[in-house]
Length: 354
Image (cartoon, rainbow, N blue to C red; front, side, top):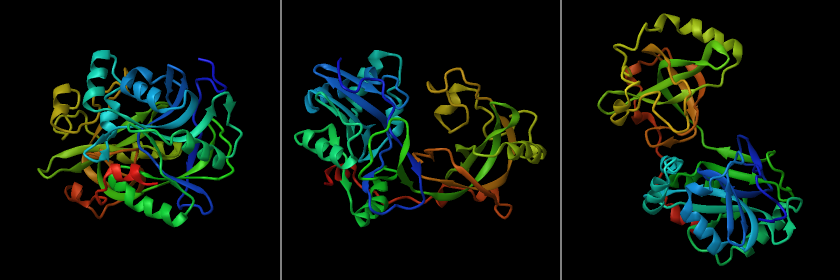
C-alpha cells in the first residue's frame, strides 16, 4: 500500500455542546465503530478509532469497499449494523471475536454497512489541509455511484434541517447531530468538531459500586431498574466524579454495604449462566478481557437521578451522568416505564435522505 496518507490514522474528534451551533455543516451522528478506510487497488485496510485494524472482523465490507470506493483513497466513516430498521450496536460488538469462522458466519447473518463522511486523500493527493466544504464536495462526487452497503452520510448547511434530523433520526438509533465548520481542515485526534447528543433523565436504584483503578475510592455506581416482573436489572453505571467526591461516596454508602452478595438481586453475577436470563453486572465480555469486574453490593434502597443519551435494548448505551440523590423516590418505583421512547424511524429513510 502506497497512499499520500498512510495508516494508522486516528480520526478527528468532536466535543460535546448543548445546542446546535449556527452557520456550519451538519451531519447525523452515527452510533457504530468509527473507521478510517485505506484503499490502494485490491488492498483495503480498515482502521479503528485507536488505530488498530478492524479489517478481519468485517470481510463483507472489504469486498463492498473494493467495489464502491475510488481505486486509491482514504475515507473516514462509521461501520454500522442495522436490525429491524434501527442501528444495533450489540450486534456490531459481536463481530470482535477471535474465531474467523464465527466472524464469517455473522458477516452473512448480520452484514455491516459503511457510512462515509470525510475524505482524507484521493489518488495521489492528501486532502488533510483542504477545507471541509471541498472535502465533502469531492467525497460526494467520488461516491456518486456507490451502492449499499456503502453510503454517503446525509449532510446539510441548514440549521433548521439539522434540528429536524436531531429530533427525527433518533428513532432509527442515531444519537444526535455533528456540526463542523465549513473551513475546517482535517486534524487527526483533535477535537475540532461539535456533537450534540440527546439527554434524558431517569430515576434509578443504586445497587452497588466498583472501586476506582487508583485505589479504595469509588469508581462507578452500579445502576438498576425494575422490569415488568419486578426484577432489578442492571442498566449501566455512572462514573464521572471528582476525586474528593469519590472518597466521600464510599463513606456515604457504607451503611448500605452488604458483607456478601447473598440476598442481593444480583447475587448470581459471577455465574455465567445467570447472565442468560437477567442483566447483571460483570457480564463476560471480550472487551473486558482479564479486567477485574468484582463489585461491592449495596442494599438496593437508595435512588438517584441520572442523565442518559439513549438506550441500547434494555440498558444505557453510554455511561450515565449523576445528577442528584432522590430521597423522595422509592426504589420499587424505578421501572423501565419511566423511560421515554423515541418515535420509530426507518434507518433506510435516513440513508436515502439527501
